[in-house]
Amino acid sequence: MSYLVIPTPEFKKIINKLKKNKELLDALDKKIPRLQENPHVVGGMLSGDLHGLCSTRLIRVFRLIFRIKEESKIVELVGIDDRGHAYG
Image (tube, rainbow, N blue to C red; front, top):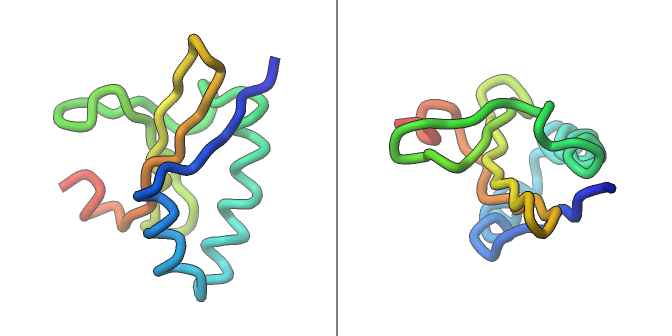
């Protein structure tokens, strides 16, 4: 069974600010089908304050932060940030 990938309102705000970064948007477009197929093999689990979230690299230092809701087969796109900010 495939997963439904949905953006959170916060993710939509972030994407709106980054919409001029074509390389980043292309990387996101390539990552979404992988998240739909099996998000458990995309990226890794986070710990500490970000426990319960997952992260995967998009381009260079940018990371996609997402949450897997296994019971409803939903992947929530939570944010995109520079690696230093996302984990700091």
